[in-house]
Length: 190
Ligand SMILES: [Zn+2]
Image (cartoon, rainbow, N blue to C red; front, side, top):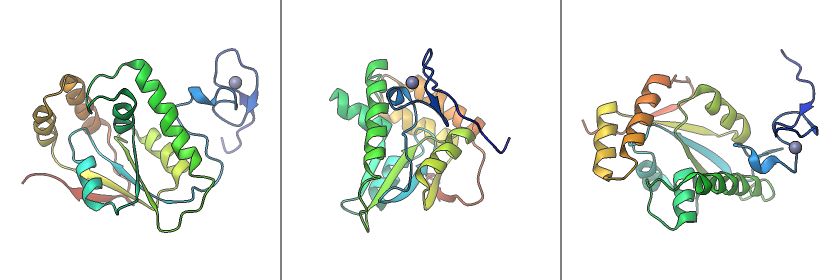
């Protein structure tokens, strides 16, 4: 289907016509930000399973002044609690809105030399394609190690969401399909 006609807003009961997703009033319910043009910063996407070393890689590689957007980090910021807790559904919803607001705000201003590091698990191909379409990353790094190594690192975090993180890591390895233009970073211990 090459042509997509106008459809109604994805919010139940709203009859506003949009090309996709939500109308202006309901866009706060959308999982994805509403980005119309290019962002004013260079974007690098970092994907990988829980425990694959995404945050460590970004911390090692980013330049001072670069931006990092990571839903886990925003949840921890909003709740005032450490990473990898169960922050609850309400914090997650607010964090999604805040993440989208931060991305949308980057449309307005051209910031030469500044990079946004966008961190997501990215194992679902559709989700990764959607983010690539929205953010037009100049590069995507995939953290590569074994599931056993991910599980080991998750266990070392000793967090209350350990079981969920391990399940998410298992799902990642089951679902992930490589794209040829993505750069593999070996984060294994061996
Ligand atoms: Zn609507």
